[in-house]
Image (cartoon, rainbow, N blue to C red; front, top):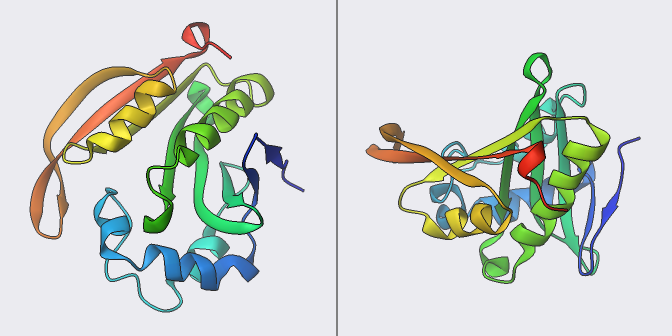
Length: 173
């Protein structure tokens, strides 16, 4: 059983197949998919269940972010065990943006990554036109590592991908 992480306002728990309808509803908003480099849009029926079913706990630690028992988003680490590092990824339902949930959940997941999983580095990226995500990563203590210009296509438009990283020795719990 995956660890449950608790913060002041949130409980981070493993995603389950029962979460699929709520994930489907939250991620179906164009704004949510459009703020990420990899969530498809339209996010069609069955995609949430397929995604949850595809999570491989041997390489991924993916949590449902819940507030007051309500699923508000997801956050996780995709591990590269050979290099003792992981990519941090997250999304929140549109109505939950701007409440500090991503930062609060990110702190808990980074702590788990460094202390429990023995990672030496955690990194993340965001679309250049999504500076709010960059602010979250900065608040998590990450350092800007560079920008890949026009690296991904989102809705047919080339987008910059901004990279951030945090080394274990730089991390301040």
